[in-house]
Structure formats: structure tokens, C-alpha cells
Image (tube, rainbow, N blue to C red; front, side):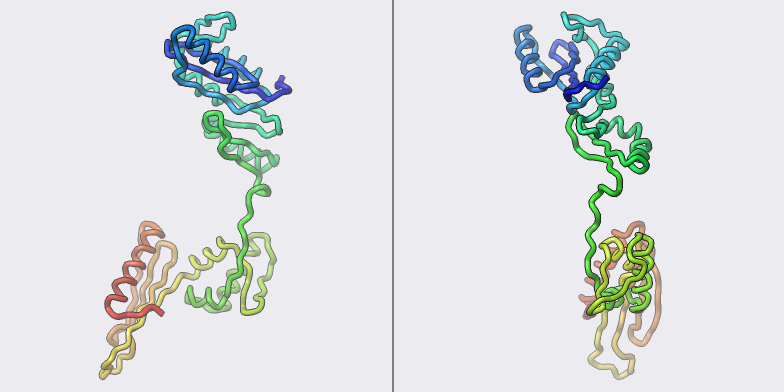
Length: 286
């Protein structure tokens, strides 16, 4: 049965290659005692691992001793918890894989155990509302929680006109896509612009609009002597994910082309470098 008071299990390796396993409610005091006793024997502690406090530590200590015996360990000492010549790494990894129950009701899993039981832990969070604490070397480092307990993304005000100008889309197209995204998120089914054409969206939804409608950057260059009547040179660059399209009207010639990149970061770097070159050639970003 789980212990009423939370306690630790631990694994210690001494310099004479003896492995000690055990149970304690006060880890600091117990380790200090073992260090003092080791000095009296002319050895020292080389490595140690301590679990988080948990309510089934007694059960886990018994499992740990059984594992050591199964690995061929020959116990010595009055407590029968010292195992000369046993592989410390194997014992530690087994100890970390043992299931632990927190006194607050949350189960604790080592990172090794979480990797082995990832889908079961996620399913328990989704279907049972269970929070599982993850630990590394006995220290709590993260948690897998039900989505309702996860931090919610903060919404922000977005100006539809600004977003339309940025993407090159119409006001109506931006509004329709915003309405679709909030409906999928289970938010308000209809997005109604407020004063100044502002709507409330999460940063993720705004980014999705930019990706689906495209992010547009325009450069222009005015010709001092336009005797041919070509007008201003205009180059428009549109980014959609890892695709970059460019349409141009340069020296009276119109054209367009699209380039694909291995990642969105690579596409963004291309646009940045392209902008630097255009500005060096006398273009101005609109």
C-alpha cells in the first residue's frame, strides 16, 4: 500500500563500487549519514540519485531491492541493501522508471517512463483530466496537463485594414477568414469589427491569416527621366509559408515568378536579402 507520509527512494554508488538502495523521509539527513559512514569505511560517495517524494515509496523500495537481487546482486550489511559490484547505471535507470504517486494526488513519471508510456499519459490527460508530473533525476521539471489547465493564449486587437494591406487581400477576405478561424476554435461564430475596424484574435490566428492570404511587401522606384512612359518600377513580394512569389513592372516589362524554399525561415531570409538588394538599387519599401 502507498505510504501515508511522502518519502524518497534513492540509489548511491560508493568508491568501492558498492551500490546502496533505500527509502527515507528525510533525504538530506540520510545522505549525510551515509557519507559519514562511508568515510569511516575509507570510501566515499561517487554518484547518487534521489526520487521526488511520493506516497508509494515503500512499494518502490521493495521493487528496487528485488531488481538488484535479480541482477545478481549479493546483498551485504545488516540492512541487506548494499550490493557490491552491481551496475549503478542500471539500478538508477530502473529506479527512475518506477511509477510514483504524489501526495497531492498527481502521479509522477520520470522522463524515461514518460517516453515509454507517452500515449497512455496523454490519453489520461485528455479523457480523465489527469495531470502527470515529469521528473529528471528526482527533480520535478514539467507536467502533462489537461488542455483546460494549460495557459490560454492571450487575445489581442488586430486592425483588419492593416492586415489586408499587409497580406494584399481584400477587407472582406480577411474578415471571412478571421470568422472561419474563430468558429473552428469554438469562439464567437461571427467576427464583428469594432471601432476603427479592430477585431480580437489570438496571435496564432493572426499568423494563420498571414500564411493563408500571404504576406505582401512592395517596393517602388521612381524614374527621374521617364521619356519612354514606363512609369514607376514596382516589385511586389508575397510570402506564403515557404513559397515566395514576386510580381514586377520594371522598365516597362511585366512578369511574375514563384520560388520554393526548404523552410519558412529560409524563405524569410530570402525576402530580407532581396529587400536589402532592392533598396541598394534605389527602391523604396512602401
